Length: 256
Image 1 (tube, rainbow, N blue to C red):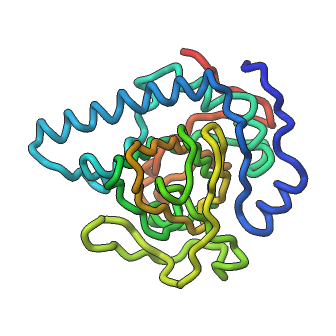
Image 2: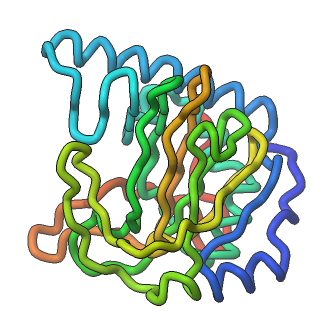
């Protein structure tokens, strides 16, 4: 296991998560893991460009070529990423928020291009599931320093959103985003250095601004659940269901 300090989630973090649905941990991802994620991100973005070129398209789902990319469920192609996904400090975050039974649910890179990286509308991650489920956990991990200029994430605390459960989302024309909040609250921007983690429940509303800087804004999103999430009608898994913690102990391998 990675030899890092696991005492990173304080009682104050736990209280804020319970009351407002999120907290932020600054500079907790080791440089070794940041390098792994950055290299993997470069690989996957280049591969997405190749796929779109082969099809003669500039949009795949909510990915828009040169502007905004979402690359999910492909960590199996880069086994070294397991060292981050199942690290001791990620286990600590999961225990503090989900409990002692945890699965890896989803993973994706979210990349915004320089000068024209698109915004992402207000949504709950649970709004993309489409059926009732127990809220899961999102760990939003910037691979560069992020701020309001390069399209950081904004979270809307429970007390300001007025809800803490999944609501109906409406597709937004032009972007294919699903939007669930239409109020005027701008949210709380995460202005944080690379290697930090914004930790929030899947029913917390969040959005991100456009990237107006001359450099890309890459982020890795790792999501974990306290149960297997599957369609109640078909039984089909929504994402992943790879066991991470059993009775609080890590059962996932960091290498394959």
